[in-house]
Length: 317
Image (cartoon, rainbow, N blue to C red; front, top):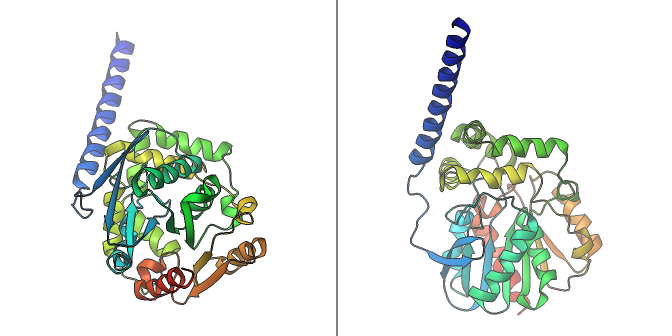
């Protein structure tokens, strides 16, 4: 009887702990909705879920693709959209699994986003498009262009991944990390810890923003975007740390004859080597560096970034 009582007590204790963590997770997701990311947007019903996007302006289409970082959304382009809309019809979207778009419980891959971008241009924009892509989404833009060259014109790639990062593929360690995050309750708790404002603030300040950039608003936006949709928000994070969104474009960048501008933040790690590597593969590629910037020059120095984009987008018409 005593053994049975101990087993029952242990089971009840474990159940109470799991229930408490589940309630905590639910509270975190509910309390994270601060209304920082507006919801009055358009929706594109794609095969894997609804894609939230914004469109404004008149002129040649320009598609803005945000980075593939946990908590990313098209909010990183907010400082540019209004002025870009003077001469372009500007489309900015939240990729599947990010921000206000649907977040299905799937493994997200670079190939998935290539198909999304291709379908979005065909179905929503409907004509040849200029593209500005940030960070890891640069490989998505390049691969999408290779997939259907007729859909793309000029391309601006902001701090594209180095070949070392892009070439990382799923391995035993990364697969285990993905498995842990995908686990219910405890995996969700781990996700909420990693996507807390404290961890986001440390990560952004250490790896992505210059010391001069005010980041409180950005941290709050990342935090909210990473929690919209509840626990399904974690599946893009697990796919990223599992290396499923990586893809090397070394063998493709040399095949593209589109006009391409690479913009690098001078404080971004290894960016000079990365840009030089891409220019060796394709000598027609143009490049420009922004002083005092790291991974997000469009956020850190939006006016200077906008000027570079406008010069490039108008000079090759």
